[in-house]
Image (cartoon, rainbow, N blue to C red; front, side, top):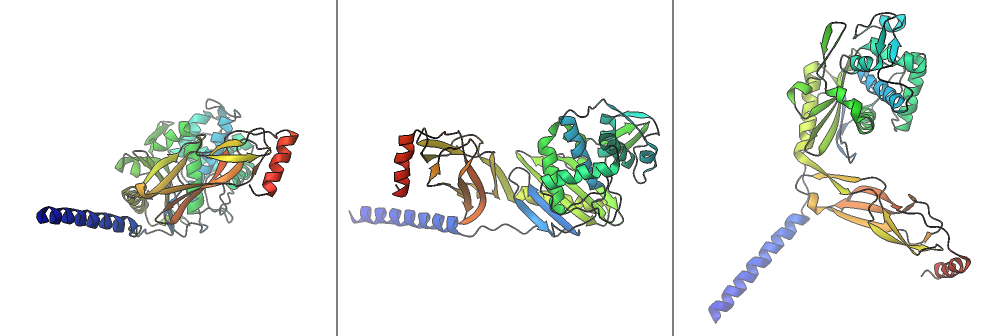
Length: 386
């Protein structure tokens, strides 16, 4: 009898110790190694889906973007294609001005007609300044007017530390961007135009019997890398915006002001490897799916399903994703009329007590005002806080 009691007590004590150790482990601090030291003037690493910043150094510092400018040039042209204002097979007549543009070239000829699609490849893959100017002139009439279009899109995308004066990235006094802004731009381009983004991973392009290789060395080193663009001027140094996708996780890195083509590739690779090694991203909630229910006052109905307007992705340190906690908070007084998409609460995601993501909760449907007596009855309940 005593032996049985001692055995039972030992088992219970062992179980209690195990549970205590698990609790202490779960409650302990989450350690993520610091980002690698990057030999550049500024850098930025973010998750494509969640937008979470994983590493940064002076991300808002205004710097010369060099040929990274062409990401915005491509973005504006892609928008024109999507809007039906332009076609890939549309012919562009090459001006003297485009032909004379200095720096890297596609080697187009004056007065020759070149399809938009070929000019885009010449700009994206070969980094042709002549192709960039030709596209800008064709879309907007002049490169100066096209720069206005570039700045309009920069403002719309929230690129608060950017101003474009040309379509090429050739040095101009008031032509600048930042590591964060360029990451936001790359994110928008990849998300909105996947059908055209494929050119960013193309390793070479031949035009006029001249084959030129893509300057993005990571396309040869890392199969997960599929873009985006390199740049160089004496003022900017060697810079790169890179993107890679491994499994279901895509990262965007920006490295500005390195010393050589190898350095910009190496530093970009270091940032990407760091992000993939120590973080993971998953879809937490799907857009349009009800997450909670709101109580509606003065409406035709008293209940309303609420959810998120866009898919919600969360990036967390690896092996800690299951420790995330999500909490929905619905407004106490939701008064009709309500339009579909109106904000009626918030979703907050925390990890180890720290908020890592907040999103608005929105109405999944519209709710019209109820009849007179419904409105009167609910008005009384609102006054009584019931």
